[in-house]
Each structure stands twice: as C-alpha cells, then as structure tokens.
Image (cartoon, rainbow, N blue to C red; front, top):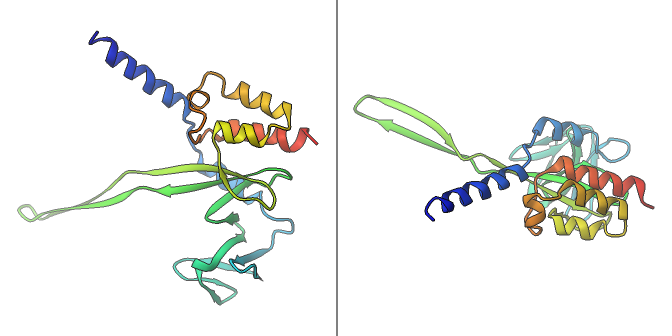
Length: 199
C-alpha cells in the first residue's frame, strides 16, 4: 500500500506537467506586434473613454505620449510598437469574433544575504513568472481561458468545438475543465477555427 501512494502522486504530477505548455515569450511578443489595431498608430485610451494619439509612448513609472504626461492608473488600453494591451493584458490574436490576450505575473523576489564574518554579500532571485491567457469578444469583457469557458465561447461553431476536444483529449486541462490553461498553441488552433471557418 505504501508503494502505491508515492506512485499515484508521481503519476498525477506527471499528468499535470504534460498539460502545462512551455510559454515562449519571444513568440508571444512577435504575435503581439502583429495584433495591433488597424493602421498601427500609437495611442492611449483612458478610463473615461478619451483617446490620446501620438507618435511616441513612454511607459515607465510615469507615462507620457509625445511628452504629455498621463496617469497610468487612468489608462484602460494602449497601443505602441510592441502591441495592443487592455486592462494590463496584451493581445496576441486580433480575432473578428474572439481575441486572445496574455498577462505575465512576476512572482520573483530578490533575496539578499550578508555575512559580516566573511564580508560576503549575495543577491538571489526566487520564484518566477506565471503567464495566464484570456479571451474577449468585441465590446465584451476579458475572460480567463479554461476548457469550459472556451467551449462555451465557441459552442456555435462545431468545427472549433471539435478541435478543442481533440487538442485537449485526455489532458489534465480536460479533466479539470474549470482551471485556467496556459497551453496557448492549442488554444490558438481553436480560436483560429472559430474566427476563420465559422460564420
């Protein structure tokens, strides 16, 4: 009996790892650059709906567009050469019916160690980043991507539902359909079918 418990835990963890896609951030950056609004202009949309256009957007602690300061807390969306972002999430697919976004949460922490006996000082970083994927209909709200939420969003397109079921068949994501998935290559195939093959 004692042998089966560690084996069961190992198999469950293995299944979980198989469901997790490795996120290629360089690929996401390229996709974001190609998902800008038509015309590719630089702009900021404030919470009150005001749209400020310009040639150059600076995004640091203080934001500015062509030298005019903007309070980053009042920014709802923006676009520059790196892509389009809304509510902190960056768009990677600009779909006519369903768009896809990603958000990177930085969970890393800097730890400093100082030993006065040997006068050594060491900085180390712990943790890492977590990438989440979201979808949005034109005029709708951004929603997390789970197996069930994607299936519901594309239910009016049998071809997209079929691709979703085939892509995630037997995976951890399908067995836990309300958990967010980061397997974006599979999600992109579903959204591609939904946006391009169904009326």
